[in-house]
Length: 127
Image (cartoon, rainbow, N blue to C red):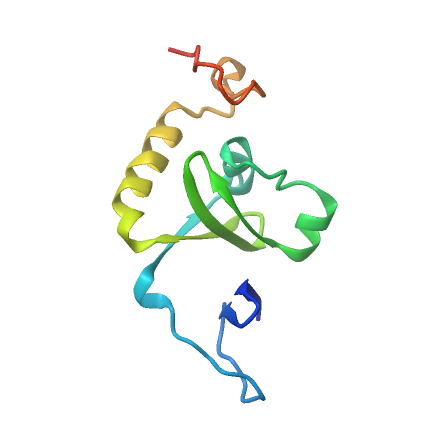
């Protein structure tokens, strides 16, 4: 089981939580969970998040709270081929549309379509 801490007194569990000396708070009503699967899932997200998902400390924990372009998200992955994403429910449809656009223009075989590291304020020159 993986616990994702959102505040000193709030956590989200990725599985059933055993009884213990803590208070469990259901926050599912305010969040939407997306699941990406495939050999490129974590690699794909790594292009668009503000964190280095391949850093040793992040890979060891298998979870992070970060931004994917302009969306605040929480990511966790039991394997690099099975990635879970949490986003605010009010932004879920917009996030799904955004992910679709990113996926359509991402081609791991064609290096000309691979995002490159650029300054944050630089325009997208891929057309």
